[in-house]
Length: 415
Image 1: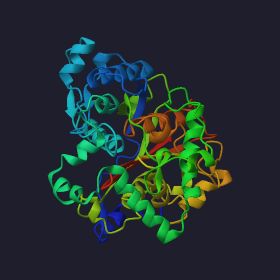
Image 2 (image 1 turned 90 degrees about the vertical axis):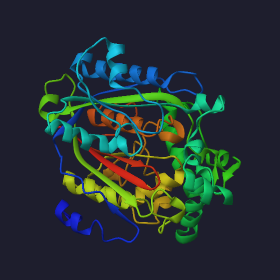
Image 3 (image 1 turned 120 degrees about the horizontal axis):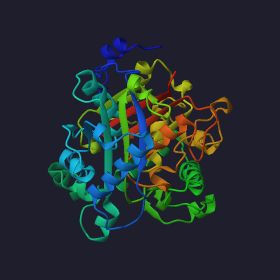
Image 4 (image 1 turned 60 degrees about the vertical axis):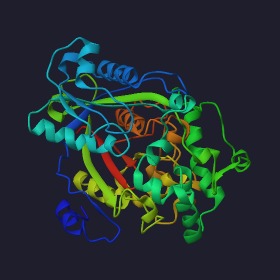
């Protein structure tokens, strides 16, 4: 490896705008053995807990694991109402003790949950752990209740120091950063369009995607109204109802299950200085993937060139573009040109100079469940059972994002 974890530890605090978290090496210790999802829809008036339990049930069926075998549960804290161990026991009619963590779910935690699960398994606190996330923001928006913008507005200093100046909600944050990227690097609107166009192509052939069979041409993209310059409608994520779940256990135990285990090879987490006030970022055209990706690569003993497919948190097209650059998949500032050459399409393999990205359609075209479906899609890619299957997948990576933090999860085929 170009950089070991020990070398990265020395450098982690050397930057004036961010750093990597000092995560333990858990490479090869834990594997994903089952994945499950609900239907992804607009406003459905479904309950978050009911959707989460439905997704767990599907994941257990995929892994062929009985509900009473689960002794660990990971959910998100503070994003959307999630379920408890007692909810799990009541639904499945079981009585076991369940190790519980609210440091799971989606966004960056869809990656870092694997690290925490490995720690719990090491400590013999749990052996079969489910990570789950559900959101019904589409229903909430229709009913005038919770939405992504409300979540940010509830933070007091954001409300006091950012909102009075009109810097709210999220489209304005990331449009500011993307316009700066265009200024610094010459990225064009036509190049930016390649990201939603490619992800829409992937969604067109994916049975679970919300925007299936809704093709997007360049002209159709350019004709869309601006949401926040330079973002048009297609540059902004969907708002959805739905849930996803995946089951983790030790790699040794995973080999006893019917489906081939997908092994966690590396995990990284990075953060900017001054979080969570992204208006204060010192590098507007960079993301904390700058710190999390090298850490995950070092743990996995790979480089960016070894990746066969990626899933990138694409709340906005520009966010995906910058993370692709910061993961080392192209030069900084070249993301627009890289995407415009068709390099993100699922049929563009690494041997052809591409890196297939968001092969299910991502947050822009598949569903907005904050990244957990990205991990599920990558598990299916490594297994070789994805709808838009990339040829010869052995190593995959998920890039999680919250603006002030990023995470990277490297998955590989079991040896």
